Image (tube, rainbow, N blue to C red; front, side, top):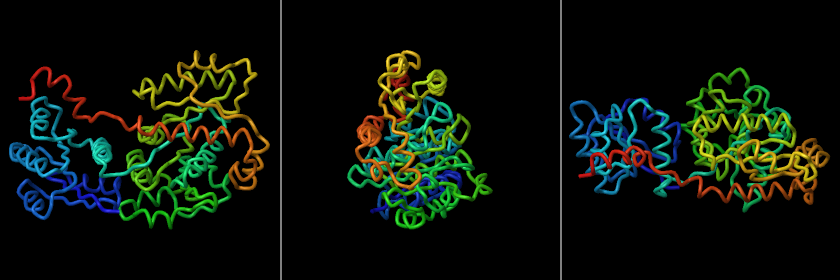
Length: 390
């Protein structure tokens, strides 16, 4: 795979570190202190993308640099001290594609990756978070089997990530030994590439790679919210699908994971406590600003004859039921006890059929989920009306 070249101009040293951790070795990152050094670096070839900081006293020179970089085909992200209208308009006029406030490193990571992805310079997979509305919803079973269903769709590269850092069950469900942990990936993301990651992360006989904290519970505190977000953005560059299990609440770590997810499967059953909790979760997602298109309400262990119908659930929760998975406890139990997927144990099961349909549904929503307007466009909508672009 050809590497993308990324040039960082005048930013804090932490910016290179954060971008390196998030993007891994698939991208060659160069840092220079000022516009003059940047111009010398560009003589060797224009970068795929540049991050240019508008420093006090040198903003005009930096803006000229933005104009020069865009003229040779580079994508440019500008870092400014604040969201001043004049600074944003100046960046836009010079050809910048994104504007991020300096110090908002996590936002910068998202915007750099998004810009590379939209331009076709970076290929990223889809992140699907499985979020149960309460305990006992069968979320780990669903996540495990869904990862297998994704792989069955043309042999796609799939990584199943267990984010329950203390008592995760995914390895047990697949009868796999743990060796390379989440904390290990977070600590070594800058040095990892796809081949090294593949050789380090355990792989199930079904073809799914599985990443968890293993038995290294004592090292779980090495993972913070920012580090987790960066790690997941790195993983989605290495796999076609990343499936997240172990999300149980709205704490800092789960929210960091949910923010990266393209789709959130909100898992409930046809029981009053579950439906009530689904309503509460949907309300919380709305308060957090999650677009309803990212949320997919899933009824697990679905029974057509239940008095709590799909219509009742939809009316109560305020979300359309996107999919259902039937109930075959005995087949799933046998599969878990053998450490295999449902297709190996009961390929004609209603669960196998519904999971294949679910994988096709989620896979088909990737293009829609990726259609997000650039942040600069969001900033500029009211500004262009007020100031004009010339």
